Every structure is written in C-alpha cells, then in structure tokens.
Image 1 (cartoon, rainbow, N blue to C red):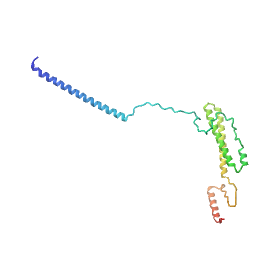
Image 2 (image 1 turned 45 degrees about the vertical axis):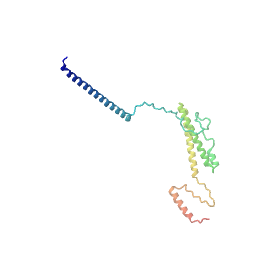
Image 3 (image 1 turned 90 degrees about the vertical axis):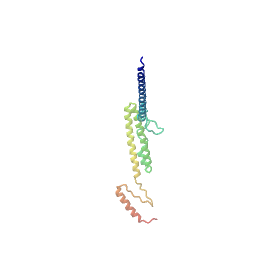
Image 4 (image 1 turned 45 degrees about the horizontal axis):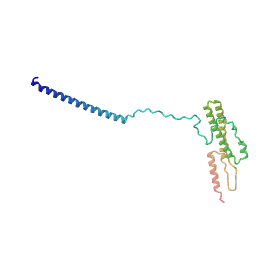
Length: 204
C-alpha cells in the first residue's frame, strides 16, 4: 500500500471518531433532557392529578320501616290489634270530671296523656302490620289511632279551657275581675279603668 495514502486514512479515521463521539454526546444529552422532562412531568402529575381509585360505596344498614322509630323505654311495639286494650278509655272521664270539679284539670291531663300513648301504640302497630303485608290489620290499627288522636285533642282542649275558666272564689282581700268575655283591646281598657278606681282605695 502506498505510503502517501496513510495520512488520509488516519485523518478520515479521526473524523469518524470525532463524529461518533459528537453523536454519542448528543444522544446522551437528548436522553438526559428527555429523562428530566419525563421526571418533571411525573412530578406535576403526582401533584395535580389525583390517582384514580375504585372505592366501593359503603352499604348502609337499612332498617325496616317502623323499627327505627323512637319508642318509650320499656314499651314494646304492638304486633296485634291490641285485643287486651279497651277501645274506649278505661274510666268515664266526663263523670269523673263532674264529680271532681276542683281537680278536673289533672284528670283531663291524665286522659290526654293516656290517649296520646294509645294513639302512638296503634300507629306503630299499623306500620309493622303494613310491612308484613297485612293491609286489613294496618287499616284497622290506623282507624283506632285516629280515634285516640281525636280523644287526645279533645282532652287537651278541655284542659286548656279549664285553665282559663274563672273560679268565683272571693275573700275579704280579693277582687276578681273576669275578662274572658272581652276581646284583648276592651279587656285592657277595662283593666286600666279598674286599676284607676282601685288606686283611690286606702290600703288597710
């Protein structure tokens, strides 16, 4: 091989080597840039993108209708038509009120409470009967509940009326002024008039 061609080959070999080195550096730089870019992208995704999680919706324990109702302590839900309970109050409230006129208010309050309690028991029993599919029994219990609801309201109204009733009890130092028959405006005027007249009476 001629000696004059060796420098050319050496020069070409050096150029090829330099080119390969430059390509390697460029490739490494590209890989590093790409790796850095991917890393930044992952960091951003982890910060602002919540991972998708498949969470099962918790199943809530559902109680049957009527089982989650508030009940009186020690009182069980009625499951039968309350055969052992008289559909009418056990005592004659009207007669008892007439015989004890002075103590009629507590008697009426006791009757109202008894009727409200029976109403609640009948309605709760109606709910349980409806859940069991016995519509006839549920309808019967609802009607009984309505009956005691009406009686309880009447007892409440009568007891409230007793509070407003004027007891004609007068003593030597008492002056009874009954304003129940007057409306609010006239009642206030009448009260002021009597207070003015009483102001002129000397105190003993």
